[in-house]
Each structure stands twice: as structure tokens, then as C-alpha cells.
Length: 122
Image (cartoon, rainbow, N blue to C red; front, side, top):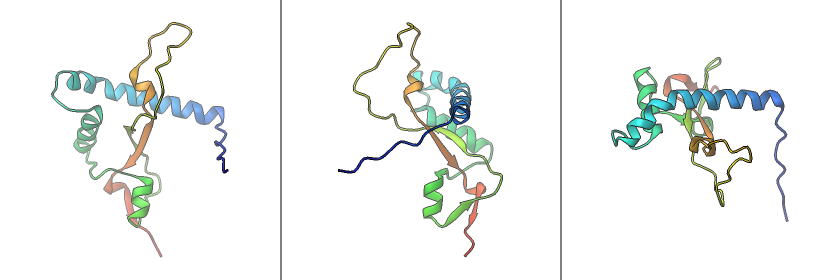
């Protein structure tokens, strides 16, 4: 029976992840209302349109680009989208009584556009 150990995440790494999550929540906020009004289907649809207006198209994860024979150019930074929520058996309410934002249950997905990648050198 094989078990996989989770990687230990440092406080610095956790801090960076929290920063990115908060940034993604900020840029997602206007799209929540558009989803509620039925103007767009998902927050990611709004984020993708925002990135497209900034010149980013054909968004893929690092793994997807690598499988396509591409690599991310040096100095490029990932764009952020919401990933699929990981399965939870039940929603847990924090003990301190604060509201739980539904976005807290969604992982962050890091993607790159076609302009951020280049062919892998042999």
C-alpha cells in the first residue's frame, strides 16, 4: 500500500499563496455580480475576457504547455484563474463565527498565455 507524503510548505510560501488568493478575489469581485445577473456563466469566463483584453490568449497550465513542447519564457508571471473545487464532504463553519467566502474553497490555477511561451530548445 503506497502513501504519498504532502510537501511541507514554508510560512513564506503560504504567505505568497494567500497574497495571490487575495489578489484573485479582488479581480474576481466585479465578475461575481455579472454571474449573478446572468451576463456571464462563470467568474473564470470574466477573468479570461479580462486577460484577453490585455493581449493574453490561449491560456494553458505549465504542464499543458510542457506537453505541447513549449516552455515559459524567463521572467513571465502566471495569470490566475479559479480551479475546480476539491471534494469536501461538508462545509465547515469557522469556530470564530466569521462568514465563509465560497471562493475560499476553490484552488488557484496558474496559467500562461501563448505569448508567454516559446519552443523548447533541443
